Image (cartoon, rainbow, N blue to C red):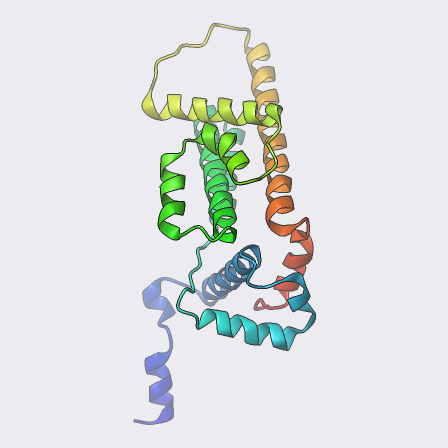
Length: 228
């Protein structure tokens, strides 16, 4: 068998996978971005490592060949897009559902990374994430992990959001009082404005803890490793 035939055997059949070249490139970039960011958060690479691209590349290859190599793809962007789509369509319950799922993913991922830094074993981390409810994760668990508290205002916004999510999913019948439509729309707009402000706050909070406020710098360095 010649080299061309061997090449055909080893290349991905994108048609069978239902993917385009663009899809494959995006997938590759998503993997690279996720892996580099997670290794930085875990303390396996530092901001100084980005100063020497060749040395960093070698270090990344060594980490990739390690037995403990693991990564996950971040889908939180898609969750936010769905939340905003439903909000624009006026489907309030669905919008809150996806905002809540987004925050739950972010909170669980944040706790997972912080626990890894503290060398807590994976089984225990999974038990913590499964066993501690959202109110616990945004209050006393942060204290136990030695992290700064979330402000009371944003805790209140998150608690209300998750309560509404649970009411919707588990259908706890709780009719709203009849108000003027204009007044109700104003309150809903303000509620979503507060949710968006909490979203911005939480991004800054996690960036401060996980990235020492260097996330933007790290993202710029990561771009150098992505396919054009």
